[in-house]
Length: 347
Image (cartoon, rainbow, N blue to C red; front, side, top):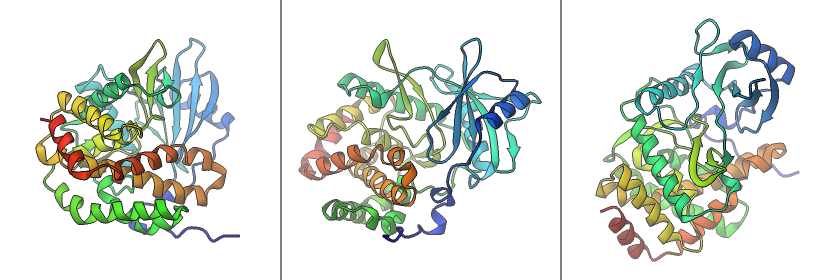
């Protein structure tokens, strides 16, 4: 039997090593009725860290029951709740969930294993089930920009928590790189990380910082079934963090790259984002390397977690093929040309 991958440094967060809570459906239904007055049919939803259920009420309305990972600090769950409340006031037209109060008016319910809360359920088709199109890429860029715009001015004591999925923390990925089994891909990941540490990380200090969603991957975004290029919903605020705003652009863009036309697709995404929420030239200059760093983050963390939790490997590895294709495509670009193209796209 092969040895497990090494443990990540403790400072990078226990959430990487703590499995999702185990909640029986009958217990979830009982808690939903007791604390939120919700009754209906239950369906378990996939999740990497929490236990989530869709409750479909008799009137057809849907609700998401979220049981937080035991390792998630209470302040971090409150961070998510307050962010959704902030968006309800600053950007009420954004298609994001609404946090429901309990019957007694509380934000959430404290259980022995963590906090339990309920959210409205957004209807739509997961974006990863739809073929990519240029129009959808532009729509995703605009949605990312609008979401960051709506979160401007929001602050919370938990906003600066350390999260390995936060691009600014990429240096902490190095202990996880051996989990990438392909030697050539591991070498590319190391080279990308070397450039990040030497050139990108020092430049992040001069960028504009704010709370951002930080996880706009196609599994967290919904499309309108009637208008597949229209973004109908944004889910899962569990990776929110205060970080350079341009990092959130890079996260979203990393899932929208066309490996057959990497520079064109990235430039189109950056231009659409910039038209909605303008970038500063120093921020635009970091896009190429930040997108590549997000891709290596996906490769490193997914490979490491899949080896530790093989029973959940299919879900954990869902974004790995696109991350690999994207990173290889970006690495093959003439660097000077790529940087110049992105600068023009964001003028």
